[in-house]
Length: 399
Image (cartoon, rainbow, N blue to C red; front, side, top):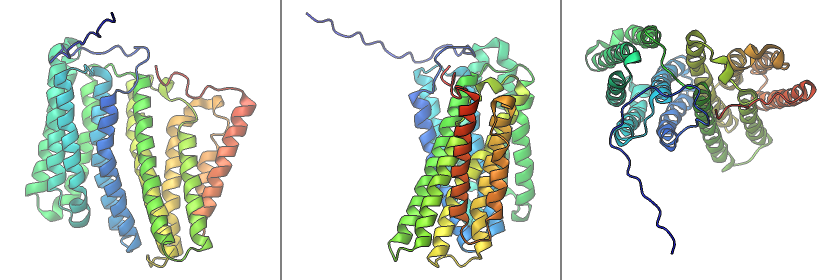
């Protein structure tokens, strides 16, 4: 007679204590993966709006709107990721509160078109406030369950709640002419909250877990690049296929391959040795994510220009791709590769490849040339790792 499996009920609410930052085999949970998917919509919507703005020649306003909206998307994801790394209890209340944050992320996603096209931030601000509601309820739990970090959690609650209220007032009551300056002030206030809160006692986030979470978000952003660029090339190829379109498709694909390659070439967990480095590393990923998403828009714009659907100069179309690639490579090199020193023998090639890509912007073949340069960077990486011996670049990423 076979024994029936024992079904253990999930507790409604555990005491929220800080998790061990040296916990072994700490990996992203299924809830965290589900959470990340809610941001796919927002990233895709923002990148699509950037593509249309660039194709219509609205470069300055389109880039500014894209960067501001992406800041809201990135910041919303970042706050939850670091908190979950330190306090994920996986009880019923935690799951439900996380789903409130996810609902807010979807509301925020729904507000992206209105914010981009009409500078109407109301839906965006409401979605952000909903996300804050779910997160701050968790921080209050942590304040009660972890006396050693009570002051830290209460500072987070005070600062983040004040910022959420600020965005609601800005969206619903601020004069339109003041909006750009008030946005800058709001972003600055948001950036100051974590250092201020963590100064009272650093939370026990898990370095390997954090680097895995950021890596997963990088994959999501690169997935959006593949999706948007493939869709643009597919639409272009529905008409008369040309050699230029095939070159754009191939160059774009190799560019994305190269972006993945350089990001995951070496582990970053060992770099997060103190709060200052962790904040710089976490904040710097905004450039990586925004640049990555913009690459997809750049590929799509070049495909639209090749089919005469976008009437913009070759240099503008080229820069739409090469500048994001340059900033992506520069910040990945600065944050993830350069700190390894002698263990990163090909690091010098990354900024150089980015500059050469920018120089190709006015040739009319920027996508193909950038793809060739990224292929060269992959080969350089393979050669360098081979001559240096096995560096075990991803060793320890799973704790």
